[in-house]
Image (tube, rainbow, N blue to C red; front, side, top):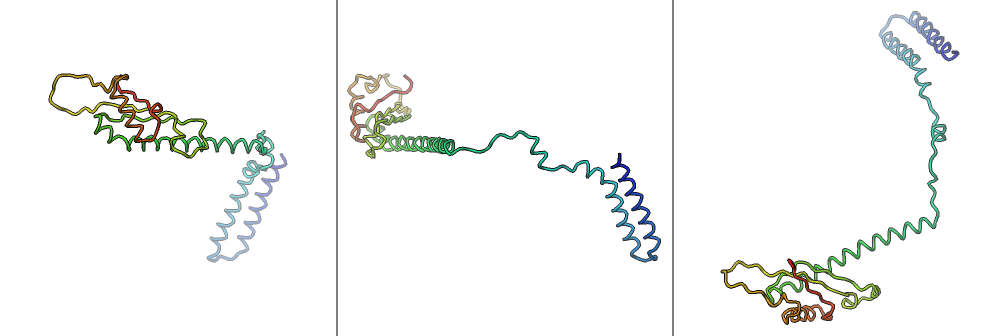
Length: 198
């Protein structure tokens, strides 16, 4: 209640003083400016309770919140860094593997089209887990799987023949594996061929 009495008394005293000052000042061009200044001060005095009501100390607001402890130990930091390194290494390895598969596909695709009339649909390379430190290309690769499709060139319809190349036991398939093996410098048993649509 004392806050309200102080506030009203401040307003009354200032209005009384403003009236006295305006009566003492002679009529001039500055009279309008002085009345505007007094009006602004009275306006601010009317707003004083609102300013006091919303005046909050930041320390008291922060003390009310129960913030979690944001400190991090060096062990947690090292664990986080090693996890991030692993993620970056995994994405880097995946990119390199994808580039390797694309390189194999582009290097041998033309040879397979010309000799056997087949197109490479996909190439999947499996790396040997034991040869991580190896820098030799052929030592890192465990298996290479080729997904092949026959070339579908539109020609005159003739008698339908099932190609021998698609037979898993066929000599054509073995010859194709040997061609790929010699082209890539890999052992024949590390090359798999799968036909699309089977």
